[in-house]
Length: 258
Image (cartoon, rainbow, N blue to C red; front, side, top):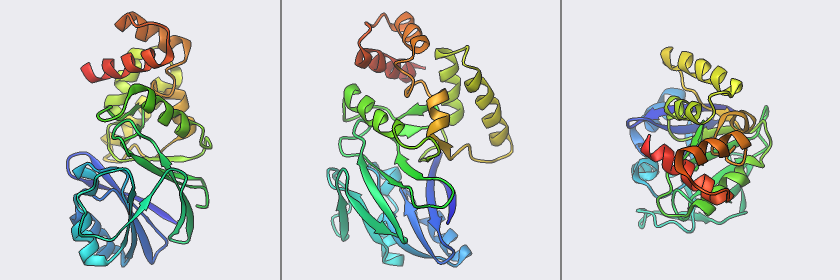
Protein backbone atom coordinates (compact mmCIF):
# COMPACT_ATOMS: atom_id res chain seq x y z
CA UNK A 1 0.00 0.00 0.00
CA UNK A 2 1.17 3.50 -0.84
CA UNK A 3 0.15 6.54 1.21
CA UNK A 4 0.25 10.01 -0.33
CA UNK A 5 -0.76 13.39 1.12
CA UNK A 6 -2.03 15.59 -1.71
CA UNK A 7 -1.77 19.32 -0.86
CA UNK A 8 -5.03 21.12 -1.54
CA UNK A 9 -6.70 24.47 -0.95
CA UNK A 10 -4.62 26.59 1.46
CA UNK A 11 -3.30 24.02 3.94
CA UNK A 12 -5.35 20.82 3.52
CA UNK A 13 -4.10 17.35 2.79
CA UNK A 14 -6.28 14.99 0.79
CA UNK A 15 -4.98 11.52 1.59
CA UNK A 16 -4.61 8.92 -1.15
CA UNK A 17 -4.07 5.28 -0.21
CA UNK A 18 -3.48 2.97 -3.16
CA UNK A 19 -2.25 -0.50 -4.09
CA UNK A 20 -0.90 0.45 -7.51
CA UNK A 21 -4.25 -0.06 -9.20
CA UNK A 22 -7.06 1.15 -6.95
CA UNK A 23 -7.17 4.02 -4.48
CA UNK A 24 -9.07 5.34 -1.50
CA UNK A 25 -9.46 9.11 -1.27
CA UNK A 26 -9.92 10.72 2.12
CA UNK A 27 -11.56 14.14 2.63
CA UNK A 28 -11.39 15.55 -0.91
CA UNK A 29 -12.21 19.21 -0.43
CA UNK A 30 -11.15 19.75 -4.06
CA UNK A 31 -11.47 17.21 -6.87
CA UNK A 32 -8.75 18.66 -9.11
CA UNK A 33 -5.59 17.44 -7.30
CA UNK A 34 -7.16 14.01 -6.84
CA UNK A 35 -8.10 13.62 -10.49
CA UNK A 36 -4.62 14.78 -11.48
CA UNK A 37 -2.96 12.25 -9.16
CA UNK A 38 -5.21 9.41 -10.30
CA UNK A 39 -4.41 10.13 -13.96
CA UNK A 40 -0.70 10.59 -13.31
CA UNK A 41 -0.40 7.34 -11.35
CA UNK A 42 -2.83 5.33 -13.50
CA UNK A 43 -5.18 4.63 -10.59
CA UNK A 44 -8.90 3.98 -10.27
CA UNK A 45 -10.72 5.59 -7.34
CA UNK A 46 -12.41 2.74 -5.47
CA UNK A 47 -13.75 4.70 -2.51
CA UNK A 48 -14.07 8.11 -0.90
CA UNK A 49 -14.00 8.54 2.90
CA UNK A 50 -15.47 11.67 4.48
CA UNK A 51 -14.77 12.51 8.12
CA UNK A 52 -17.12 15.49 8.56
CA UNK A 53 -19.30 17.99 6.74
CA UNK A 54 -17.01 21.02 6.32
CA UNK A 55 -16.60 22.08 2.70
CA UNK A 56 -12.81 21.80 2.73
CA UNK A 57 -13.28 18.08 3.40
CA UNK A 58 -16.16 17.19 1.11
CA UNK A 59 -16.46 20.00 -1.44
CA UNK A 60 -14.80 17.96 -4.17
CA UNK A 61 -16.88 14.81 -3.65
CA UNK A 62 -19.62 15.46 -6.23
CA UNK A 63 -17.17 16.12 -9.06
CA UNK A 64 -14.95 13.24 -8.01
CA UNK A 65 -17.87 10.83 -7.82
CA UNK A 66 -19.16 11.95 -11.24
CA UNK A 67 -15.72 11.38 -12.76
CA UNK A 68 -14.94 8.05 -11.09
CA UNK A 69 -18.11 6.47 -9.72
CA UNK A 70 -16.24 5.75 -6.49
CA UNK A 71 -18.27 4.61 -3.49
CA UNK A 72 -18.73 7.32 -0.84
CA UNK A 73 -18.51 6.57 2.89
CA UNK A 74 -19.64 9.30 5.26
CA UNK A 75 -20.67 9.77 8.90
CA UNK A 76 -24.33 9.03 9.49
CA UNK A 77 -24.71 11.84 12.04
CA UNK A 78 -23.44 14.64 9.78
CA UNK A 79 -25.54 16.81 7.48
CA UNK A 80 -23.63 16.57 4.23
CA UNK A 81 -24.18 18.61 1.04
CA UNK A 82 -24.36 15.39 -0.98
CA UNK A 83 -28.09 14.81 -1.27
CA UNK A 84 -27.91 13.61 -4.87
CA UNK A 85 -25.14 11.08 -4.26
CA UNK A 86 -25.41 7.47 -3.07
CA UNK A 87 -23.66 7.52 0.31
CA UNK A 88 -22.86 4.59 2.59
CA UNK A 89 -23.49 5.95 6.08
CA UNK A 90 -21.14 4.82 8.84
CA UNK A 91 -21.81 4.79 12.58
CA UNK A 92 -19.49 4.47 15.54
CA UNK A 93 -17.95 1.01 15.60
CA UNK A 94 -19.06 0.05 12.10
CA UNK A 95 -16.68 -2.31 10.32
CA UNK A 96 -16.54 -2.49 6.55
CA UNK A 97 -14.17 -3.46 3.75
CA UNK A 98 -12.60 -1.07 1.24
CA UNK A 99 -9.49 -1.55 -0.91
CA UNK A 100 -9.25 -5.08 0.46
CA UNK A 101 -8.77 -3.79 4.00
CA UNK A 102 -11.03 -4.00 7.03
CA UNK A 103 -11.87 -0.53 8.37
CA UNK A 104 -13.49 0.61 11.59
CA UNK A 105 -15.36 3.88 11.97
CA UNK A 106 -14.77 5.74 15.23
CA UNK A 107 -17.10 8.51 16.41
CA UNK A 108 -14.96 11.49 17.46
CA UNK A 109 -17.40 14.36 18.11
CA UNK A 110 -16.17 17.75 19.20
CA UNK A 111 -14.99 19.61 16.12
CA UNK A 112 -18.37 18.76 14.59
CA UNK A 113 -21.21 16.83 16.17
CA UNK A 114 -20.96 13.77 13.92
CA UNK A 115 -17.25 13.67 13.07
CA UNK A 116 -15.81 10.19 12.48
CA UNK A 117 -12.33 8.78 11.98
CA UNK A 118 -11.35 5.70 9.99
CA UNK A 119 -8.92 3.10 11.35
CA UNK A 120 -7.33 -0.05 9.96
CA UNK A 121 -4.64 -2.29 11.37
CA UNK A 122 -4.40 -4.39 8.20
CA UNK A 123 -1.87 -2.24 6.33
CA UNK A 124 1.61 -3.74 6.26
CA UNK A 125 4.02 -1.70 8.36
CA UNK A 126 1.76 0.13 10.80
CA UNK A 127 -1.94 0.82 11.40
CA UNK A 128 -3.53 3.84 9.74
CA UNK A 129 -5.83 6.49 11.17
CA UNK A 130 -7.58 9.08 9.02
CA UNK A 131 -8.78 11.54 11.63
CA UNK A 132 -9.88 14.63 9.70
CA UNK A 133 -9.88 17.63 12.04
CA UNK A 134 -10.24 15.73 15.31
CA UNK A 135 -6.52 15.26 15.95
CA UNK A 136 -3.60 17.18 14.46
CA UNK A 137 0.09 16.75 15.03
CA UNK A 138 0.67 18.79 18.16
CA UNK A 139 -2.95 19.88 18.38
CA UNK A 140 -6.63 19.16 17.91
CA UNK A 141 -9.53 20.74 16.07
CA UNK A 142 -11.47 23.72 17.33
CA UNK A 143 -14.64 22.79 19.17
CA UNK A 144 -17.37 24.14 16.92
CA UNK A 145 -20.36 21.87 17.52
CA UNK A 146 -19.47 19.60 20.41
CA UNK A 147 -18.34 20.18 23.98
CA UNK A 148 -14.91 20.07 25.64
CA UNK A 149 -15.96 16.86 27.40
CA UNK A 150 -16.83 15.26 24.05
CA UNK A 151 -13.57 16.36 22.46
CA UNK A 152 -11.55 15.08 25.41
CA UNK A 153 -13.32 11.72 25.21
CA UNK A 154 -12.73 11.59 21.44
CA UNK A 155 -9.02 12.25 21.87
CA UNK A 156 -8.86 9.64 24.63
CA UNK A 157 -10.30 7.09 22.19
CA UNK A 158 -7.69 7.96 19.57
CA UNK A 159 -4.88 7.97 22.13
CA UNK A 160 -5.80 4.39 23.04
CA UNK A 161 -4.98 3.14 19.53
CA UNK A 162 -1.64 1.33 19.03
CA UNK A 163 1.37 3.62 19.45
CA UNK A 164 2.62 2.80 15.93
CA UNK A 165 -0.64 4.00 14.34
CA UNK A 166 0.09 6.57 11.64
CA UNK A 167 -1.91 9.74 12.25
CA UNK A 168 -3.11 11.14 8.92
CA UNK A 169 -4.58 14.50 9.85
CA UNK A 170 -6.14 16.74 7.24
CA UNK A 171 -4.19 19.98 7.68
CA UNK A 172 -0.57 21.13 7.73
CA UNK A 173 -0.90 22.93 11.06
CA UNK A 174 2.04 21.24 12.73
CA UNK A 175 4.51 24.10 13.16
CA UNK A 176 1.94 26.47 14.66
CA UNK A 177 0.68 23.71 16.93
CA UNK A 178 4.15 22.78 18.14
CA UNK A 179 5.07 26.40 18.83
CA UNK A 180 1.98 26.70 21.00
CA UNK A 181 2.82 23.38 22.66
CA UNK A 182 6.23 24.84 23.59
CA UNK A 183 4.44 27.65 25.44
CA UNK A 184 2.58 25.01 27.43
CA UNK A 185 5.51 22.63 28.02
CA UNK A 186 8.79 24.53 27.53
CA UNK A 187 10.77 21.78 29.27
CA UNK A 188 9.49 18.92 27.08
CA UNK A 189 12.66 17.73 25.33
CA UNK A 190 10.82 15.42 22.93
CA UNK A 191 8.67 18.35 21.85
CA UNK A 192 11.66 20.64 21.28
CA UNK A 193 13.39 17.97 19.20
CA UNK A 194 10.28 17.27 17.14
CA UNK A 195 9.77 20.97 16.42
CA UNK A 196 13.29 21.21 14.97
CA UNK A 197 12.64 18.09 12.88
CA UNK A 198 9.37 19.48 11.50
CA UNK A 199 10.90 22.88 10.76
CA UNK A 200 13.51 21.10 8.63
CA UNK A 201 10.81 19.14 6.81
CA UNK A 202 8.84 22.26 5.97
CA UNK A 203 11.96 24.14 4.90
CA UNK A 204 12.57 21.31 2.43
CA UNK A 205 8.97 21.50 1.19
CA UNK A 206 8.05 18.18 2.82
CA UNK A 207 4.90 17.38 4.84
CA UNK A 208 5.18 16.87 8.59
CA UNK A 209 2.56 14.11 8.40
CA UNK A 210 1.82 11.38 9.09
CA UNK A 211 2.72 11.48 12.74
CA UNK A 212 2.10 8.52 15.07
CA UNK A 213 -0.01 8.06 18.17
CA UNK A 214 3.16 7.37 20.15
CA UNK A 215 4.71 10.62 18.93
CA UNK A 216 1.58 12.59 19.78
CA UNK A 217 1.41 11.14 23.28
CA UNK A 218 4.90 12.56 23.84
CA UNK A 219 4.39 16.04 22.38
CA UNK A 220 0.72 16.97 21.97
CA UNK A 221 -0.64 19.02 24.91
CA UNK A 222 -4.21 18.02 24.04
CA UNK A 223 -3.32 14.36 24.59
CA UNK A 224 -1.28 15.36 27.65
CA UNK A 225 -3.84 17.61 29.34
CA UNK A 226 -3.78 15.48 32.50
CA UNK A 227 0.04 15.66 32.75
CA UNK A 228 1.13 17.64 35.81
CA UNK A 229 3.24 20.12 33.83
CA UNK A 230 0.41 20.83 31.41
CA UNK A 231 -2.14 21.22 34.20
CA UNK A 232 0.11 23.71 36.03
CA UNK A 233 0.70 25.74 32.87
CA UNK A 234 -2.99 25.88 31.96
CA UNK A 235 -4.00 26.83 35.48
CA UNK A 236 -1.38 29.58 35.57
CA UNK A 237 -2.56 30.92 32.21
CA UNK A 238 -6.30 30.71 32.85
CA UNK A 239 -7.00 30.38 36.55
CA UNK A 240 -9.14 27.30 35.87
CA UNK A 241 -9.80 24.62 38.44
CA UNK A 242 -8.30 21.16 38.58
CA UNK A 243 -11.19 19.30 36.93
CA UNK A 244 -9.83 17.54 33.84
CA UNK A 245 -12.55 18.85 31.51
CA UNK A 246 -12.05 22.40 32.82
CA UNK A 247 -8.31 22.12 32.20
CA UNK A 248 -8.88 20.77 28.68
CA UNK A 249 -11.41 23.50 27.88
CA UNK A 250 -9.03 26.20 29.14
CA UNK A 251 -6.18 24.70 27.11
CA UNK A 252 -8.30 24.78 23.95
CA UNK A 253 -9.36 28.37 24.65
CA UNK A 254 -5.71 29.34 25.23
CA UNK A 255 -4.84 27.92 21.81
CA UNK A 256 -7.79 29.76 20.26
CA UNK A 257 -6.37 33.06 21.52
CA UNK A 258 -2.77 32.36 20.44
